[in-house]
Image (tube, one colour):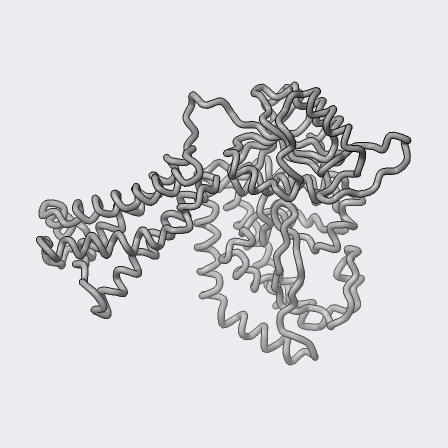
Length: 479
């Protein structure tokens, strides 16, 4: 991967050349004729080929609009391939809208409609491919592996197991145990304090360069050193620092490995048999991931439009049923321990909430309208907006309340395995009536979904959930 200022120059220069080339290709008489003859919706347009000063203006404006809209991508930040492609495509469309707006209001030279559409269409393919290609690592370059942890003993033990040389490590300034055996004091960025001699001796033993910083520098080091593999060496695999490091690896498209003793706490590749095991940071196949997001967007938009009158009626009923807001919001856990605010129609009287899971029949705070909404699952409809915004998916493990997570983790040590996929409106646990009151059963279904997940499996779950909703609505209407 090209890094530093070279990346900025190469990426910007490539965008400029690709944009100019796309305008010239779209402005050619042959491409104009084919586009205005055989492409539906555009077959009534005239063939307009720009020449001279008009052509120069078209190229200059297109380069200015597209290159300007892509400015966030010039920063040399490693990303997953799909994220890079989606962001580049989105920015190309922004540049296209800017050109169309300038031409529509006659604030500058107007590009012919056929030329504009063909240019943006070509760039929507070429520019994402360009950014994916320049971030690609040459196959002859050895991997760059970084060790991250808060336990020097474990770091020293796992480093020899790495297939390629380790160029450095991240950990708190000094970690380990105190010399006299007394309890150590907490250190910044996790870990416990100890003497500097421990870190120096460790560094000399495994022969790595001086430590690159504390745990707070994970993201900056991943970018600065173009890391492709991270080995995690923490005292516990269920701490916030551990999942924070996994989140950074997921965000930057970096492979993560853990010691085999952690396989009960994280999702790992079943094909690994060595001491170090790959973590499945992205359990989905890239194509399935694309289809899943497309399905989420279509499902949420259709649901919000079709069910808008019903949602308005429910909001009115909730407001008339008693005092309190129409919507109820709660902080829920997302992937890798991140949090987001979820919205539902209020089904309980406003009061302090307990984190201990309870059955609906035992909860005396549920209102009359709320009981009907819960039985028919209609209180979940506002979550369609969270799905459209990308914070949730249609199918996935149910997002648990942040305070409830702590209770569930005490009963189910491997609960955090659910964090490896985006939370969902419905899921395998929901259609099998597994609730938080039985966290072990719920976790079994969630992990089974993660192992079997696919687009077709999602469709089966959605169909079964819709059928259950219709049955519940019919039962309520009959009563």
